[in-house]
Length: 308
Ligand SMILES: Nc1nc2c(ncn2[C@@H]2O[C@H](COP(=O)(O)OP(=O)(O)OP(=O)(O)O)[C@@H](O)[C@H]2O)c(=O)[nH]1
Ligand SMILES: [Zn+2]
Image 1 (cartoon, helix red, strand yellow):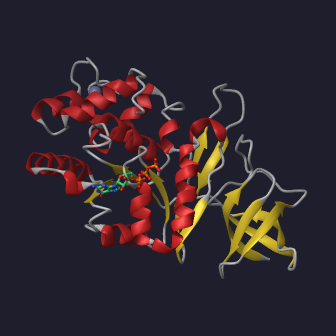
Image 2 (tube, helix red, strand yellow; image 1 turned 90 degrees about the vertical axis):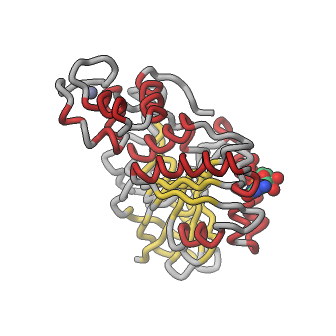
């Protein structure tokens, strides 16, 4: 029995990477036990599994067991009673590439991404790309936004994929990790990935076309090995996950700067909208919580769709 990592899944076949980097085509053992989850797929990209080589020349293997997951991204069915679908598991970090000029990533979108990552217990980092095309005013604004998110506890970095600025830092960020890479089309995901793994040109084109297929054509994520044990998942997108499975009362728990205050609101079930004695609203008043973050919060509670 050997340990492997699932790097691709098509539904019935799985690509399993051995510890030495060999990739087998694997199936599930007949009597494979599902974990307690109500899901359509027992195994997902990122799962660590136990397998046995079936046929060395045919390159096939049988998966017999799955290791407990550190985390996973699940897409719930729109029908509450139906089964969900696991997009990816054991993700070390979620990285959102944003640009403040073109395309312009909205703060609402950033906040939604961060809240979604928090809800799945995945650490998130923001990368501000295309810094090279910012004028003085733009740079000052970018720094303001970086200061805001760093003060909440998120790691931020500025890059220019075309000029090479910050590219080493980006490489270090990804090194030896499984990273879910996200961002609007055109922010420079492919260019950044190519900058750190130039030999992988073809593959990142694949990543890119893969991302372009969008939400409706595919639900299976795929992992690309950029360097030894450095993987990126270009998922059909954390962005389409939305807040589907989140209760209104839960949302403030995923704003770290609000979470710290929740016990001090007068009402334990405070939604921080217009309740008296609300510690969150007080903190917005004193500037301890940024207004933009609070607006994002209100939008999410109201169920607004700001996924663009
Ligand atoms: N000035 C500048 N242009 C950049 C930078 N990074 C990427 N670009 C350009 O932005 C455009 C889009 O870059 P891509 O890497 O294709 O963006 P993407 O996020 O992969 O887009 P999709 O493949 O649609 O998801 C290209 O013309 C790049 O040359 C940067 O740091 N500075
Ligand atoms: Zn409150």
